Amino acid sequence: MTYKESFIKFMEECGVLTFGDFTLKSGRKAPYFINCGNYKTGSQLARLGEYYAECIHENNIPTDVLFGPAYKGIPLAVSAVIALSNKYGLDNISYCFDRKEVKDHGEGGAFVGKSLKDGDRVIIIDDVMTSGKALRESLPKIKSVADVNITGMVITVDRMEKGTSELSAVQEVKRDFGVTVYSIVTMEDIINAIKDGLVGGKQYLDSMLAYREKYGVK
Image (cartoon, rainbow, N blue to C red):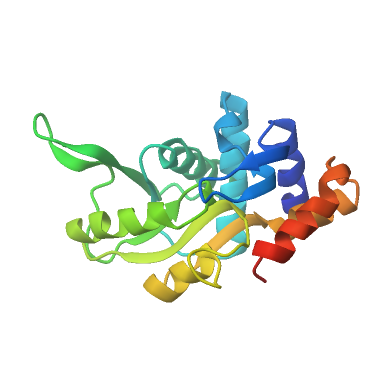
């Protein structure tokens, strides 16, 4: 089993890959939903971090710092940087995250963790990209602190559906900011896993394919 197939089974086991009738933030009606809020335990986060680390390693994305946008991205970046150390011996990689409100006492500042400096190679870590909002909000914050090099963004699932144009949110981010978004898996990977019986959901397959036909992007 590949790490991508293992991750899809992991999502199902954690109740993250769900099927039914869901209304998304976009207003679209979808037969599936990726509920990343269902990663709850220490062991789940440890495994999740390993999948992020494997994606970074497989794609050979250079990095000095993993940045986790508050709030969801914080535990993701932490778990990933731990996995990079434990699994690949990359002990020199740091993490940081932003505060929602700038701290005006103590050490102060808008960031926690590694103090970013010019030239740092930064990977942004997030869960599922729907509109690219996390990256659009994070970039000006990061760039206001230092002239870093954003070497990529890593997410769990690329939904591969239209954003605000005929392009996907992932493709729009590449067009607008020149940032490549890497995903552990894509919706095509998930659909193939359902077809192959690796995970459940076959009763939703036709509606998933119809949804992909209407909103999907290759």
